[in-house]
Length: 127
Image 1 (tube, rainbow, N blue to C red):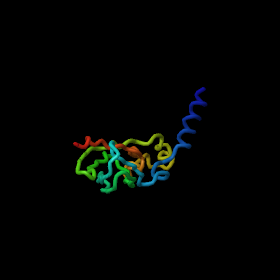
Image 2: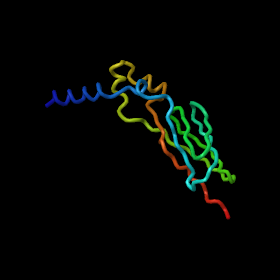
Image 3: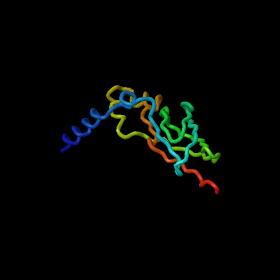
Image 4: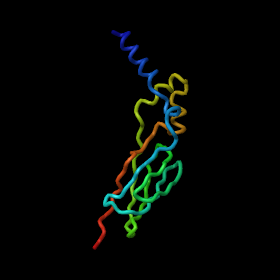
């Protein structure tokens, strides 16, 4: 029984990938406003800053901090907020095999991700 458990654990380590090897530095984030309006957003984390027309998709550099957004609709309504950075599952096993123990992933943040599709809340336009 212990042998099967050990084999299963070793298989999990061998089959899981190091994020630095399998992940791109940038991820596409598609964003739109909650009311369907058009506009522009500025995104920022410690790795860089990006702008995008809304609705749209922008390539964002992975980071372990929140992705801050500042947006304005075409009719002048402003909104700000953030998107939490999350850890992608089971990416650390190969780090043990490659003897870096996750250090490379910690430096590059390639094991982190943001939601790929976000809806940015904006208050209703006044009539």
